[in-house]
Image (tube, rainbow, N blue to C red; front, side, top):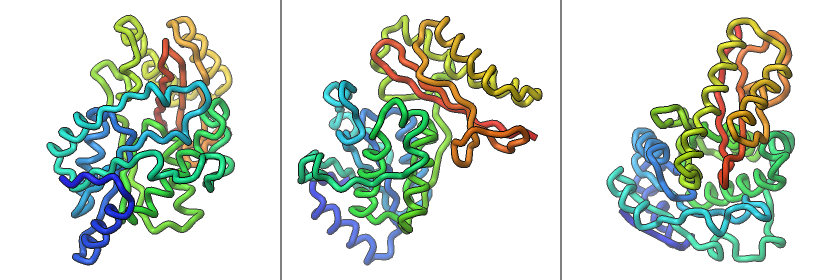
Length: 283
């Protein structure tokens, strides 16, 4: 596996692969890799001849008072895992390499509509940071395909919309959330949880599943279902940010008779902000 830190070296390598006719896949990550990340890498291997994984903790997507400084950075361990999963190139740039200008002077990519609701309402500027760094990575690597997890459903839709609107020639592939045995979505931030908190965390997915079953059984009072779920999160010891039922295609408030819906939840538990979602088709 090749490990590079500079954009120039990255571009030279992928340019050579492209001249040789190889199809290139990109898996953007912030590191601290778990099984969910590695399944994205395995999927990328199925879709392309060469796999590039980026590890970059992106300061632009962290708000004031969030965990940028304490976010786990485990590059050596991550590198070993990526080698075991047959990654061809690890791109691990510094902040100065990606953002040579001060952040206040940085050109920003914004995706209106999708970015200021749900997580974007609580974390203003977050999705502009995501869209900007992903756009930059696409311009650096020029991948044929990029693979993302569906755990952050809103992020995936933001990236799809950005690619469509900016006409970036990359295929976006989403992969189902990888879960622990008790249903908790795998996340780097799960490491913040104490054993007691970890035992409480699966309630998020249980409530998503129960709400999906109620929708499939014919319930359509979305507001009541959302309020009930938030109350149960509080009773379980979590501090809900939101529990919302939205249209899966654009995250707008649904009307009765919608086809595919998505339930999205975010809640604080100790020092961790946990997110999850579940889609359901209403016939």
